[in-house]
Image (tube, rainbow, N blue to C red; front, top):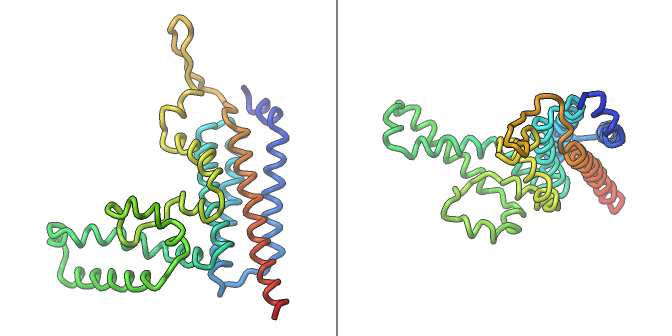
Length: 256
């Protein structure tokens, strides 16, 4: 299959994707985002990232790069889960904005809790990092998230394995966004391409009845409809969530 054949065959879904990208751009242009509002800042950042990755999906799909398209589509969904969850809850925005601190904590604690590793650093460095850990933990403990209540049963099963300040999982973001089905039936499938699982290889190889092995080396439209359709859904959900966020602000202002 050639690139021209792929574009012609899937013209309708490519056009739908272009329209959703244009719509999200329009939503960003017509709403006034405040740099002092954590929801606005995180939402705007993620929307721009979603537009970038969605445009990448469009280009990869047309080029017949099926695996790269599926992996990029998976990233679009993750961005969309976070964006939608943040639009629904200020607490989600708070925890997203504290993610850098969580990452820093996750890197420092394993090193500084290991006595053999501590021996490689000066007392001054160790003291500085120990204090940094205490400061980060103190700040994170001030944040009480709705997600911690919603996922209490999930955390209970993993409490012995998880750190006290672990990252929110992609599934957790999907639950907060109300996108569990998209996670199960799209994100999880695309993950096989991201991690080069055996299932993601089936479309590029074939075995004849006589046992001869063939490899496909040209452009492929494998799962194009599923990937582009899921990304279009993600874009539409993002646009709706942002419009909902600003509609709520306007409603609150009118109520006053």
